[in-house]
Length: 45
Image (cartoon, rainbow, N blue to C red; front, side, top):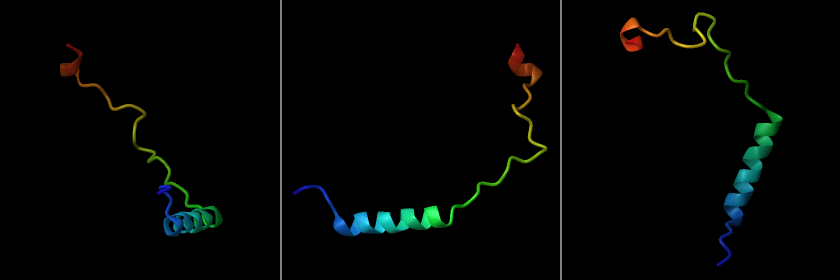
């Protein structure tokens, strides 16, 4: 056994081609979201 699966390899190849042909963009960061959450005074003690 070689540990190869031709059907799976072909499926991955086809999906990778589709991803390259039609890439998706990730949504941008919301403008009202701070870079770091504010630290509460209780946690600073």
